[in-house]
Length: 235
Image (cartoon, rainbow, N blue to C red; front, side):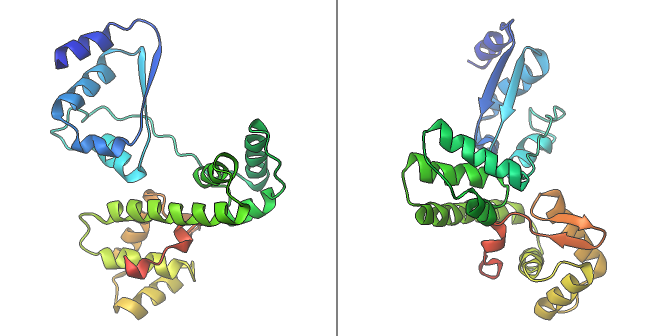
């Protein structure tokens, strides 16, 4: 079966694109499936794969797989979609509504609540234009559903970390202050003395996994509005 699939994919001679969503589940897939992906990924340049899903899951499964994984040594190109600016966000919502012939005049209010995060704007548009919910219900549903998604994402990030409380405390403190000095003071109020290097490494890890952004040297911020809604003390 594995060899047949590999032969089938490698016989494709025209450019083809294959999309695989929820790729974080690839770590639970059979080794045979991973062998097919790994072989075709390396052997047939006509086939391009697009992987989507949990950011943490994508990083673990594809960007940093174990040495025993068939995908080891085949790093994909990572595309991080940055938040839109205000004008682009409004235009994104406006055009989406127009495609469905929906009258909508609350772009400013939606953008103020959701910033320019494409996933949340899209989710809101689905609730409002496709499911026909009111503006208020669409917004509250977007925030609640978004919180569930990001809580799961953050929990994936925490897996295997021995100092989970440090990370949740940093995120909680970052909702109030944003300079390194104030972050350290806030963390130590809750946890006691924290080593400077340990704090800096934790901030770097959060930064590298897109939970926070570095505005300038020593200044950090939670940019995603949904992440700011989470009660990290309860995680």
